[in-house]
Image (cartoon, rainbow, N blue to C red; front, side):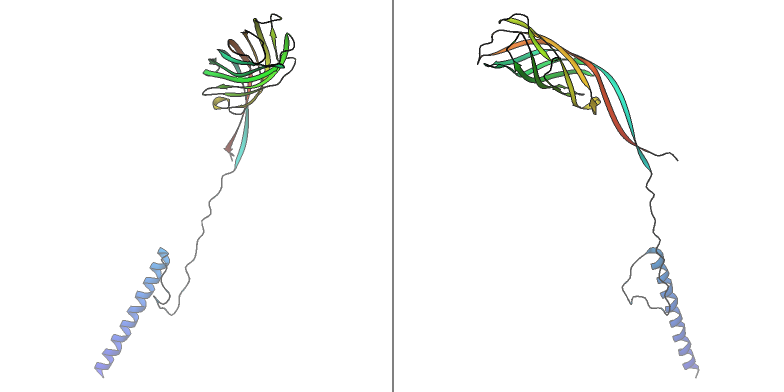
Length: 220
């Protein structure tokens, strides 16, 4: 009888010990969030672990628009290539080097117009290339003309006009507005089919409007 009671007590103690170990394992699993295969831990009563979801708050923001006006002035000297035809003249390339508002830069462009009169309108496209640059568009109008001093070549030619700002880079990013330009060069001949390279001087002045949009947090 004593041996049987001892055996019964031992079996009961082992069973109790297993339950304690099992409950301890369940507690560890719940705390650490470890997934165990089904049947790995047996218990008479299990309570599912509570899942806590943490949601991050998205900070409220707003867009702020700023307008800045920058006075531009550039002086350039370079060479232009001209191609004459029976109906007019084309400046196939215009390249000048100089200094603008934000340092050294290069003026580039091309265009053309009629050569029927002493003064004729012309159109074209240009740019001021540098760390901060501008892309320009020149539309023919009474304000944009090339006028020869003499009625026949050779002759000095003066140029005056208005250029629209299409876009900008660097410190001129977001730029709009219009610029005025003037320059001078001399033509050698006007024979159809002839080409020539002439030196020129030019200045570009005006006000550049720069629009910037930034996103900032909303203050509570």
